[in-house]
Length: 246
Image (cartoon, rainbow, N blue to C red; front, side, top):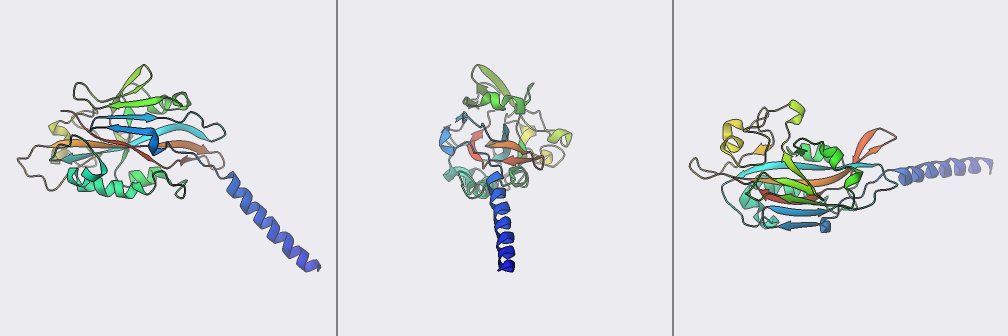
């Protein structure tokens, strides 16, 4: 009986430790896909959740990739991704299982997205991590890719110009860091890891065909696991696939 009691104690202690670990494992809720309204090919509205109290939330992060295409699309939907660029369709297929998932939680979104060539969105003249910190909770993010100006993100009365990544100095975007469709953005000699590492070509385009470019953007909530001091992520949501203005 004494030995049986010892075995029971060990099993109970192990189970208690395991279940406590599950209960304490930090999880961050995502921006629900239903909170995002996509309009045509140039506008999206993201309604941010208003409360992350009791979680290790620090900020939202937006990851993007630019795709070269030979076709214009007045309205970008999942059904048009293959026509825009087959790599866009393949990338979206890799991410779609995670959107609104209650199973794939605490996946390292940094590895997932950067493994497929995605970069972190920046803002001109502002730190996007500060802009999208707890002060942004409960607000709407309005993304505007209308052709009348450089693409922007608006929160309340504040308007921010979207800024392409340079990989913290690892590459040098051409012709600049604006999300505008220009020749130096899509010409093949600039599509490499040292220049436009955030842009992917479409091999089927003929030499004389007109080029269009599209930016796919996803949003995820980010936090810090205080037990390991490593970042943790919510599942992602698709903001939109925007056609870049000329």
